[in-house]
Image (cartoon, rainbow, N blue to C red; front, side):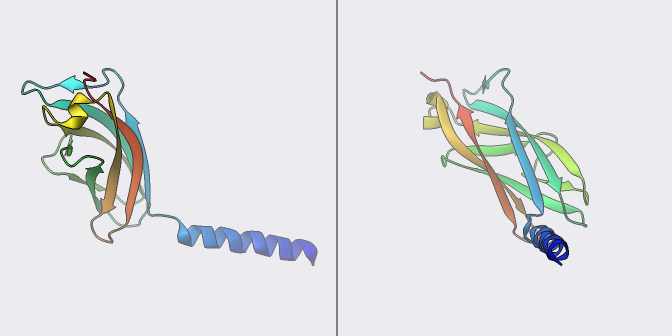
Length: 138
């Protein structure tokens, strides 16, 4: 009876964990070589590799944004939009460019704490990862 009740509790815990998990798995890795790029117009750009796993059973569109300083903006490699579609139950590797305009505080600072957000445009589910934006450090 003790083993049965113990295994029942473990099973119930696993089922509960399955239902409360997020439908988005997100990993953000800054590209460190080089830490930042100065564009022709003087803007500073950092590159991040984002691994985005869609744990839903439908193809889903995910929108990217950045928080930390209002002057920062996001662009994605391979698309003019700030969103990508990820097929059902698959992972996508997306290069994300975060740019600070010339003369802005993040462009001049050595390091600025930022948060990269990913939002499921259908359900509104959001996930984030904290990282660092590297500026010129003058």
